[in-house]
Amino acid sequence: MVFVGGCATGMHSHSGNTSTPAAASSFTTTDRAWIEITIAMDEQLVPMLGLVDSRTGTAAVRDLGREADASTKAELLDLRRLHDQAGLPAENPHKGMEMPGMVSSDQVAQAGALRDADFDSYFKKCLRDHLEQKERLALGEKSSGKEAQTVSLAARVLQEQGRLSALAG
Image (cartoon, rainbow, N blue to C red; front, side):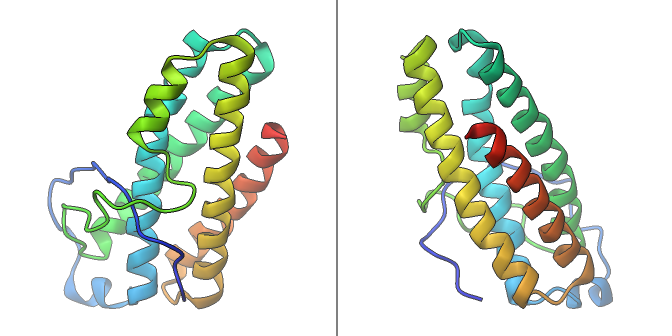
């Protein structure tokens, strides 16, 4: 599996590694990389999603933001569980890297300075970029990953990305 670009900050914390060596060994390098990259991408999106209610003037964008927020937070729960099962380190090695579709702190700041139609347009563009990159990554995991739970989550991510992409238009 080839991942496009680097990654950015992942700021998750875990209570520790609760997996057994046998369970952790079922995760390949591809599975592990997908988990870490997807966590970093989702965590970088959360601050942008937090701006939607106070910046948009439209119900459709407010609904899109809420749908994306709920989906992202649910996905993060599953990813963090898999992260721990895979025995990955608490510090995400992708911290500080950038990649296509990764929402940066500069983008969050720029979005925070916008309102109404300007915010809506910028938010939807950032969300579409995020969803497109996550789709590429999930396709790679689905085709090259080996750990059944991780491949299954990638398939669910693909379905959810398609649903959110349709809403983001």
